[in-house]
Image (tube, one colour):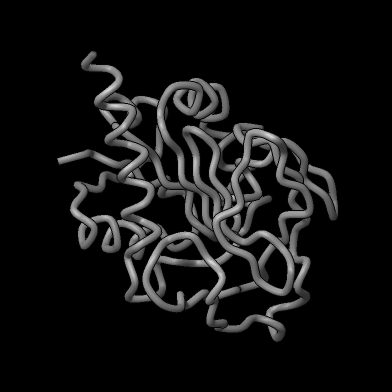
Length: 196
């Protein structure tokens, strides 16, 4: 069973841990750099990206997270997707820069503009996918190393690179575990390559 860390500084990390368990992984909370030891992958949950960034810097996690993401899969949702992006807009802020994409914060509007959408155009197989958008960012640019797996209103909302996965919505709040399983597939591929 893959052991997947969930960054537990702020945000909906408990819901991600439950979703990972349903998908067949063993979740472990991460608060310090030492907690990354022995993990096969990491989830950076939704929350408030500037608060998470401050806490990551306060605990000295930024270098450790960048080093982890250089060789192991990271899945970022909502604020986590912002932190994975190479470029952040509205306003600009530092990030882990693990994925070649540009993300605009709070691009759909205020909390009142949050919504639950049904997404039919995706590459995960099966029927429609429920997407919970809460003060969601928009991926304005997905670079050459990124593959768009789903769009909403013409914008990418689920993007992957060789190692990483980013969603601008909250898949952990829906009963569908296809996205978490997609992440675990990436983790297993890295594990298999390491054994060769």
